[in-house]
Amino acid sequence: MTRIRIQTTVPYEVEIGAGVSVAAPQFVREALPRARKVAVVTDSNLEPLHAVAVVADFSAAGFETETFVFPAGERSKTLATYGSILDFLAAHRLDRTDVVVALGGGVTGDMAGFAAATYKRGIAFVQIPTSLLAMVDSSVGGKTGVDLPAGKNLVGAFHQPRAVFCDMDYLATLPEDWRMDGMGEVLKYAILGDANLFAKLERQPRAPIGECEIAECVGMKRDIVERDEREGNVRKLLNLGHTFAHAIETLSGYAVSHGRAVATGLAMAARASVKAGALAAPESARIEALVAAMGYATHVEFPTAALVEAMLSDKKVSGDAIDFVLPQTIGKCFVKRTPLAEIGKVVEDAR
Image (cartoon, rainbow, N blue to C red; front, side):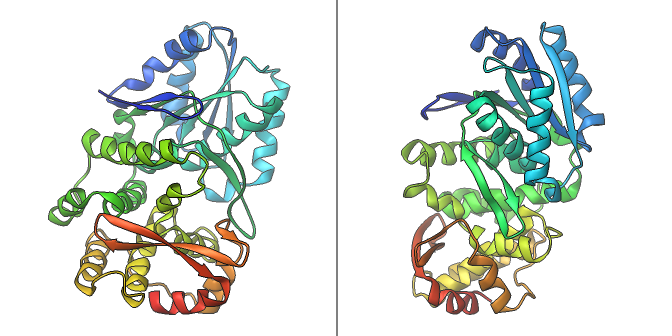
């Protein structure tokens, strides 16, 4: 088992290993001794697989435990579902000493965390990520929120979890599509700051990853989040590939999953960086080749104008500019502040 401590405003630990989720009830009992009730938020895919056992574990530890289940998928990540979670917490009379447990992937963690951040002006929550994407990225760092029709994560809050339990046993039940979704974020971290991990993926682009690689990604995110908890500067680097990816997701009506969109966005960012004179063409070719070898699309069919329009609603727009994160070499990236009037050129360069 690997334990990584995150030193944010509310410090917490990420535990990575087989069976670590069974420790969650004891953690809550010790770290939050006044808690009496636990609300487990999960989706319709996870309920029959894991929720019954998790609820049983919390109940056996003496907590009054209730379960909120929503239809699985990004299309449920809405204000309406978020409101239903709040109504559920109120109906079961959770108070400010109680706990929300997010059991699921990134959608579950984002929504459950946002509900915890805002219910009674903030209650504690614990992340039990079940997807590879959530383990390597979204469960760590305290970003929570929901989507609007105009774009992803336009409503949300920073709210750090009290603990994260990355149980490797859950990955055994992960469908291949979901594994690939997570590998898109793993590739992001390799390009962002780990040339050795990138080379490892080049050698075995379809191989499953384990506790060591997950810990490497979490460690990279920790190093960035500890320096910039609320994304004022260096944390923007974690958006590598995401400006393109969020536009792809929005235009596809979320038929293209987040991790797959990120992988395509990485190829687009590489091409744009070559055009900007920041990345050598052979390095870009390596990135594109690995994106393809891992099974992702390297190009998009959406028109430039549609991509630009989607980007104008991105939360990374600030004033009259937007931030693109571009690779400088494999293992080092930078933020390119781009005037809104020049987005079309960047998109064309990336196509």
